[in-house]
Length: 295
Image 1 (cartoon, rainbow, N blue to C red):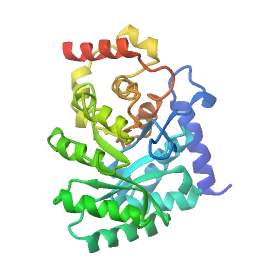
Image 2: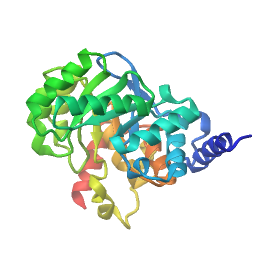
Image 3: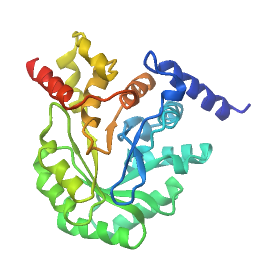
Image 4: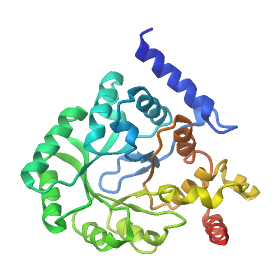
């Protein structure tokens, strides 16, 4: 048995060992929802652009990616620094089809964009990228025209637009109405505003929704620190405060995937486990939000 095979098998064992009590390996498969543009299924929990994917600790990055694949996840939000690691992992594990990579683009010129796109294809080992995602635009109108052109020319299967703050909601609404396949935006019990208009608007226009900031860049955990989970969270198979936030997000049926970031294996499995078991219904979601407002 070579070292990579050993690490892969060990990763599967580690994933199973880290699962919530009562969940066996056969049950530890994250459910998926269809991407409206094509019907392709996308698991409802994924990874954000964790710094570990852009660093030098390849073994830790591999453990996290093993956990994602072992539990049926696919989506990873990626920046240029992460692409060599993800490409290496895909090559070593024949995992190109197992990873759905959202490749962020935010350069200043069409020529620089195209160079970045070609570099991403080479590093990821994908002749057609899964998704190009415009993030933090400098010249939104011009850059979105390029995104539409890159898709038309066959550089990516999907195109999307990503934000993490409410002040760009007008741009999100614009791309929803003008050719986007995906939008990524901030959405949680602490930042619920996207659920009022943008997420339903995306659904009505056949646009998939990815959510970020489930823990509001760490602000969520001090709010619940030292508190016991309410006993009623057992009604929807919630074991941790991380799952409490994530289950609220993904229980919105219009959300395709919630992404999380961590460099710790056990936290990654905990986050991914939010997709397992029952999800809260509308009354339970309201109760969860009322609870967060009360603390």
